[in-house]
Length: 443
Ligand code: SF4
Ligand code: SF4
Image (cartoon, rainbow, N blue to C red; front, side):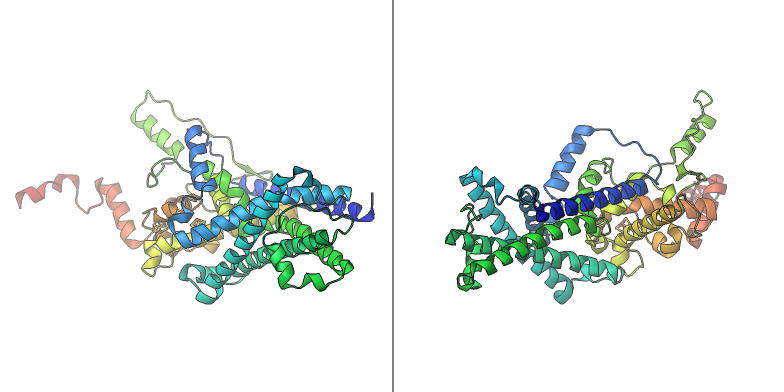
């Protein structure tokens, strides 16, 4: 086994180990949330996942972005089938080991090339939309700093990877034409043969072409391994999480609100003695620490694990915010920011656990990032959940946080305070007792 093969194996092994470790940390962070059993209506869940995540049915509601996204998604997934060949070649020192597939191989390489140019063009258009046209939902304040850099970085990386792929094939094709040893004549090169002509590869020596082909080959595989590990600190984690997140998404009517099951059980038991009181749930333990049971959500531990998976699945596309009536009328609320803040907070909690080996209160919470003003601006219309291409539910987080404000902190809007008082005293939201309720009929 040559030195190149040994370096290659070490590289793939290290990248895979790092990726596995980081994925396990994200899984741990998601499971910091409260337990929630979601395994009903399985057939319907598979159908929704196939339609929404695989078929990207909600993406194409906005056709330009939707079609471009499908090209990037399909291109990226399909072209990476070729990684299988790169890995075998890298380990065994072979070259185009799958070329024995004959015409099928020609078809595959030709298709990869058309997809690669499609991905290249789509990413370039996405960069223009973000940085030159500055579409409103892609240039909002919450994207300043790292989120904007993250989005641009990934688009530039995809362009660089596709360029390396096409230049590698162009050099390979030129070497195949010359019958250079090791470069077996295999594959179809509809795009890279043009690249080779435009770049005048025919004027280069075979040694230079081999160097170009090898540099692009290594760049391509190192780029893919780096991308894999970059995913875990980027909004691009949605590439992996979109599928489970849609599978576990809410099948109930979007606007249906859930009571706290234990409190609802207590009330039912009080009103009907034949109903037994609900059983106490097992204590929610986080990294060895038993958490206080709360009404609503003060911090990420009080949310369901599904809300935390939602947060990690957010693509920061802003479709929710662009449909939000509160945001459109100038309120502070942005459902995208709610998801980004939740993800950033759970990642922050995860870092404390990694550093200290257990959870130690850091004096912060979700409410440190999300203000009361944002929370109370929500009309619970659910336009955001309807618009989200990966079925994320920001409203559940907003409602849980509001529930905490009302029930644990008594922090509400003045209009709501009098409504709550009226409900408590009069059994209705109005400032009249039940005995006055029909007085209007005498007017
Ligand atoms: S439910 Fe709330 S956050 Fe979602 S779109 Fe409506 S107002 Fe905005
Ligand atoms: S919640 Fe959904 S719609 Fe909103 S930014 Fe995230 S992925 Fe996009």
